[in-house]
Amino acid sequence: MTDLSVKLPGITLNNPVMPASGTAAYGQELAQQLDLGALGALVIKSTTAEAKVGNAWPTTAHTTGGWLNAVGLKNPGIEVVLEEKLPWLATHYPTLPIVGSVAGATEDEYVTVAQKMASAANVALLEINISCPNVAHGGLAFGTDPLVVEQLTRRIKAAVDKPIMMKLTPNVTDITVIAAAAERGGADGFTMINTLTGLSFDLATRQPLLANGTGGLSGAALHPIAVRMIRQVRQQSRLPIIGVGGNFSAEDVLEMLIAGANAVQVGAATYGQPTACTDIIADLPAVMEKYGIDSLQALIDQTLADVAPAEKAS
Image (cartoon, rainbow, N blue to C red; front, top):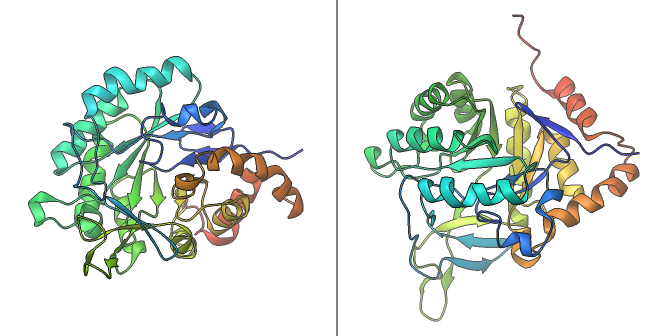
């Protein structure tokens, strides 16, 4: 009998698989395609203080090895999420753990949205999307500056009573520096990686395929990059990691856990296959048996013992 359960800060999930932020919105549309209750958790769309309309169309484009997207944090704002979206999930899926994704243009906005998101009873964890442009620093993403990451993490951690997972961007020279900064700031864990900045052109018009110009690359091409970065962070930190980037199969999930992840998110796979998450969950027991794995948590614990630094004496 295979055991798919895994532990994250403050909670045990029935299985490690959840949709990546943005791919399932707030769950209502996805619920028409699959049983949300079968998911390990549900990550909702990155939410800001006020509603955002997002970027001009076209916002997505198929490209070599994946998808480019520049949707632009389109969301209804935290008040609508608290009054409508989260109560719907609580009513229909009362035992489903929700990961509340928090975004902002300023540190104050992050703190405000995080506090409000954490007030919802069915939100188990907060995921802090630090790939947003920092308006106080010329539009550079929050997650590219270790000093900003440490300070933002510390402020959010002090303001909420739920665990916080800092979502790391790969668009940096060394992701371990950013992870270390988040850990110093008091992060409870990491989600990694966010999309990689890319650009594609229409040969006929000689213009970018996306109205925004650049976009975030997701899809199969991202997987080995994500696996490499997860292993790098695991080698320096014992904090839990939610692995994301090109997860299309049960084998991909196991590879991420072996690299050092504690759970996974599925993003681009859902674009062509809305049931990707539950398909992967259904496939996991057979693939685990193939590779002699009885328990996912035991696999995670073994990786931690083999790869992570030793626990510090208290």
